[in-house]
Image (cartoon, rainbow, N blue to C red; front, top):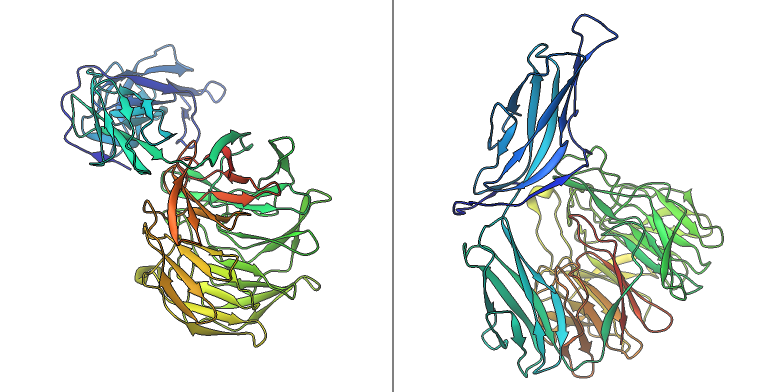
Length: 554
């Protein structure tokens, strides 16, 4: 992706190099110059690099198989910037992204060429720490660094009018009112370039603390509490190229006693946007999801119909019967009779909330026969919806993307009830807002809290006794792709959704209030309530996905 901006002339810029050449066109090519045993090969150093807008980067070429080392330098098709006859590349101002390919061709054998990739970086401001939690009236010192500009000075400010104050060296004083605020550092040389730090002001004693990182970064994955108190983290998305994301087959186990992750057996297929359901047997049912991304272009690979079981006693996955159709971004709900209701989903992925064609169909998985069979269909096709088992044994289906085709995608405010006894769906009351990327949490009194989605700061309660939704407290910040976890206290922990903030919903008052923030902003992560009452938060993000994990202590 390219960034176009009116950035002023840069007299000095920092250059960063990387030795990674993965995902590039051929770094060198050879041509026969008269002897099959002595081909001409051109190699460029560095093979890949990053350079700030307006900066220069020197490349060197080596010609193997020829005594004449002369090369002709050029840029690949569509490349921006300029390269001279010595291999000195100059990045354009106001354009960032890439990659740009630098090409060197042997002057003796012009068909022998080598290539290197360049990513152009926009000037940036970084604030440390990026997120903090302080008490009302508390203080915090921030530091800012400027990359890609000669002038390293910044101008400090607070985004919110009543969000406290910050002086010219980054010393922040919090207000007395609890809430979420932002300290902003703006480049003095270019006021279009800035960064912000998220500040949570709260009296809550709940806090996030880092725990061991996962073996692999992942997002849009699953986290499942096993019967022995450990957590199975399976699959998830990783970035395959600048255009799309793809799934992984790797899985790992988090041991709360040791506070660490270890790899377990791989799934039989790479997956993200799949489901993981703990069965009464202690096994975990994995269904659907988008594939590896190996062949993805723009929209990505098709969803899958395959399913598998994880056996905790052997630490291995085994394929079982397939679903009747492909699904990803669907839901899977364990019913009171031990069967699993699989609902909706999309056909094609490549980025968060991709759908392709969505489905209105549903299936039941029978753990005795390991077979899937169609059950009633919804009134509306959906993907990225929510499904909640109600106290009466029925299932509430809410929101999602209700596209019949990807060109007609809309976000649904509608809801339906699956009657487990009759095997049919019936329409129930609608929400005030269409939502996807929201959360649905069964409260201890039987109501369902629907929070956020579509970057909304609103929330609603569903009462299955009346079949209706009603508004409840306002969330402190707009959220989508966040998590919601019912705590032993009956309160609900809402965490992340593109940023590091978290808050608690109190059903007794119907209000949301800030609690300690996470160490890092997360979206499309997982959150699992552990047996000791702590909450394990893992991964999230897509560029690249995060491997870090945190524990929330209420």
